[in-house]
Length: 296
Image (cartoon, rainbow, N blue to C red; front, side, top):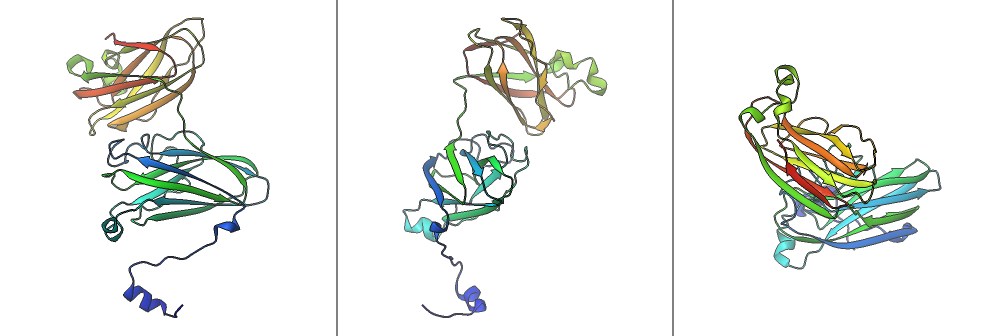
């Protein structure tokens, strides 16, 4: 034990750690995992769909609950410790469901990425009862496979588990907007031409009327893209209102649908501006079997 003034600490040391006692929290839990370098994009500027995600469900029975989340990257190499180039963080959303866009919904915590073996974020929960959150592990630039431990400490009871998705069947189509099929979004001059955009029919198996769908569209980054989903027919006369992917986004958009009845649905990818020609990838995932084909 020694004494040193703060100015000297800043002069002689690059970093220092402050210990804290985890036993001050009556509830804690940890999970160990791997994040492969080949899973998802290098940067998560447009989507965090491939980032490791966890659901956190708190039961706040007191006035205010304190939650600390500790992300620890496993380091077994001395060079890795001396020249740590992995910048990590945990983004917190008030959701409980899988997150696809980094800023939609807006996170309640989006801390800076740091190249430390340990990242800690803290927040208070004042709302009573069951509160659901989504924890998203993130990096500044993902170039290497990392191994990590995620620990949650809380003054209230909680459940922590890896986010699960219901999709079991996956199919992908390659297409393009070209010439007449580059019809735009239907606004302004493209009001009469947007119907010429490519159309794909997805036919869901008739075993259930409570299916889950995930529709993903990727295109050139300089194109603002989106799509519409319409019901063509229903196996048991179950109506399904028309859906769209929301605001047009640069190069990437995605839509998760629940309680989708068995039947046939059309998906029409489009660009915001009429006449923009280029390729796209349309991916559909489902909780049931389905067929997919281009019809226009």
